[in-house]
Amino acid sequence: MVQIVILAGAILCAAQAVRSKRLLVSALWLAGTSALVAWLIYLLGAPELAVIELSVGAGLVTVLFVFAIHIAGEEPQALGGKLPRPAAWGLTGLSLILLMMLILPGMGVRTSIPILLPFAEVLWQQRGVDVLLQVALIFSGILGILGLLAGSERSGPDAEKEVS
Amino acid sequence: MTLSMPSILLVGIFSLFGVGLYGLLAVRNLIKVIVALQVVVKAVLLALVLAGNLRGQVPLAQSLGLTVLVADTVVAVIGLALAVQVRRCLGTLDLHALASLRR
Image 1 (tube, rainbow over the protein chains, first blue to last red):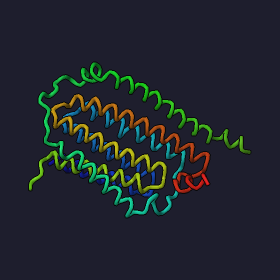
Image 2 (image 1 turned 180 degrees about the vertical axis):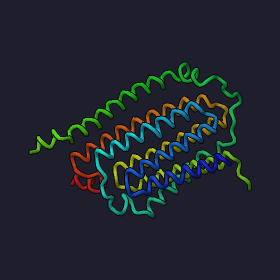
Image 3 (image 1 turned 135 degrees about the horizontal axis):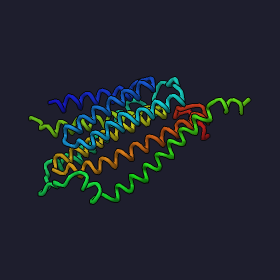
């Protein structure tokens, strides 16, 4: 029962994050969604991932959003979307129906032997390639942060001097 | 007809995914697009953990979820860096305005 309430809260926060007119408010609603998702992951028996989701998803990513919004500035959002609303709703509904048709038939299938190895052993010994990929991704992320910082430096007083 | 707990959670996860997908299709601001993408990834992460829980393979689900989380964070960082640079160079984050620059 608690899980359903948490998931409902996460959906509500996500809807507010998408609907909100102000970018900063949107980022804060997204942080709420991440926190609730982390709680739900913990309740589903994955505490290590929950901790990482809470610290990275609700912490680091929110800080990055606030930083980027501070640099880019709040822009008054124009009315109307990329697609007309009925088309967006229709495409979303169609995608969900197709996903349900794919996933629901496999819900009852169970594997014969559950894997009881600890998380660290699975991560470092069985999924070693994934860890290498993560290292490469983190390196790309660092380059992305450098891109953000380069943008903030050039928008400082030196850039104004260059213009004048 | 009574729904079991995993089925109810799955419906919730679909709803979360739908909210994110609608956001991806409907919003025009570049930073809001990244927010919507984050919502979609949260739903996928939850689905992975739920699947691991149902199949008795939680460590494997956690390992895959960790990869998804790292990739998602990097996508967010690079997307935000691109959005900031677009705003600096072109003066707008509106996707309609950016699309009209091609013509």
